Amino acid sequence: IKGSRAKHTTIKQYYAAVTKTPDLTLDQTTIQHQLADRQRVIKEKEQALITAKLLSRDKEDLIQRLNQAEIKIKSQNRELTNWKNKYADIANQVRDLPLKDVAYELGLEPDPQDKHKWQNEHHTINITGSKFYDWKQMKGGGGAIDLVMHVNECDYKQSVATLCDRFGEGAAIEAVTYKTREIIRTEPVQEFTPPVPEESQWLSVKQYLTRTRKLPSGLVDKLHEQGLVYADQNQNAVFIRRSIDEDKITGATLRGTAGSDNQFKGLAKGSKRKKGWFYLTQGEQSGDPVRRVVLVESPIDAMSLAVLERTDSVKTLYLSTDGAGQIPTEYLKEVKDVVIAFDNDEPGQEMAQRLKTQLPNATRKIPKAIDWNQDLVNTFDWSNQNRSNEIKQQHQRGIERGGGLSL
Image 1 (tube, one colour):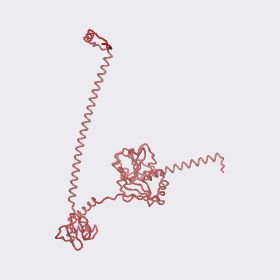
Image 2: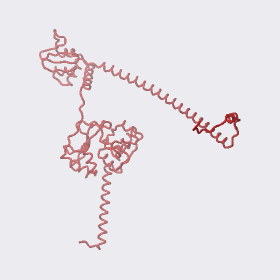
Image 3: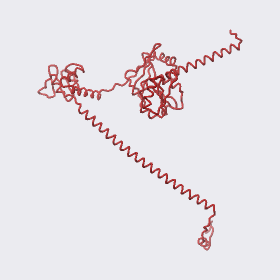
Image 4: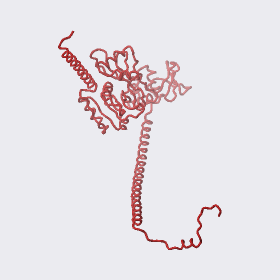
């Protein structure tokens, strides 16, 4: 064909090539390569079989663990249901005394025209279930104890004693239990209110922290700006306690600073010791997760040890237990590196041993002095002493170079 670049092969040449007997002779090198390839394929096949068996075994183990987990979950659910039913049975057994019976024992008479109304000279009380309302006194309430207190004009204890006298001890106990449950169900828990900051006392508190306790002014100022450390009207240092998970304020630790030998330590009114702690973090970026937690006995020790360690490589949380050993156990179990750094005394050792049973992987760190703040004070004094000695030596060398003369 015109323009084609294909080479022409005659029909005779083509059929000669097709019918030619193939050359089955292979050289030694080719044979060795083919044998090596075959051995490699066999080896890879064997390895694949081993891997498949291991994966199959892992799958079987996983399925078995899943089945065991499902059985355990079902068992726990059954146990939970049993406990709920048991609690419900107990709760159903605890019933308040019928108010109509109580009204009768208190000398009230039923209204012939209204079965819900009980009255006497001073009261006209309408009773509906566990609630009552006195139309003459314009007051109401709920439960047998409240009704006795209202009609007899007595306090809680006298009301319970009256019910015990009229209906027996068991009935009185049930009435008290019922009243308690109602209070728990309806009465809101009072939220903690932090002590009011008193800026006029802050300078004195700051001087105590920086001069007496040798804490760096920069650290104290930073915590003050964050609202975690401040002064109250009594010149107490206030250390705010927060929950670990929600960062919610739950209380405050107080440290007296007024006077030369103030030993006052305590919690602000309404603080929840088990739900919050004073803590600060140091190292890495603010958004990074905490990788290390150090437990100490006081807020000042937490600040002191943070200064002494000066770590920026690992984000560390320094947490004060206020010497009580109350800790956020569940949170700490999720942290790989936990350090128990309580005081170097017998109570500190006892608390550390007790916490080790809850946190077996935690390590112990002990201050050289009685506590970490004393270590910081000693370090500060030692540094100042060295600086003073250097100045004296420089001064002495200057005098010697001047021939002992000074003007």
